[in-house]
Length: 104
Image 1: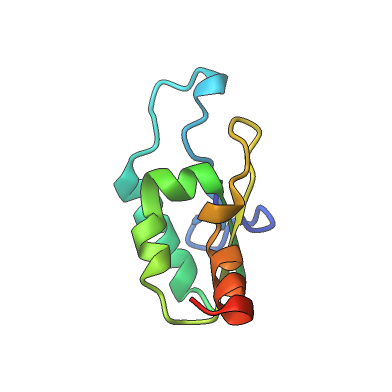
Image 2: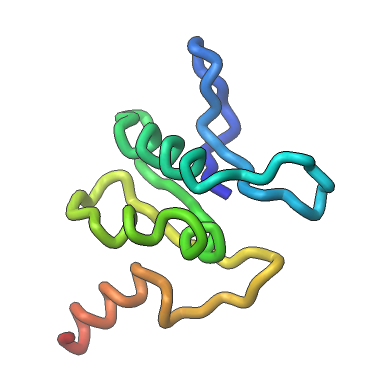
């Protein structure tokens, strides 16, 4: 899930995206292009300073976009999901912290 505080702007755009809620029996699954487009929009929006994305959604859809970023803001945090266990070694924040503390 990419999320904000659940706001809709004057253009009708949400500051959140629910990704692939197959447990809700939705007919349409979220595509990679949908997630990439929303993430690009979030990264350009000056009102957004933190993007939360589940580790699973990051791995499936936008990991390459996230790892290729040099910008500090908005911060992208990978969080655990209910469906999959959290894997610290895949978390980009943990990887960067490890490099800063212990070198490569």
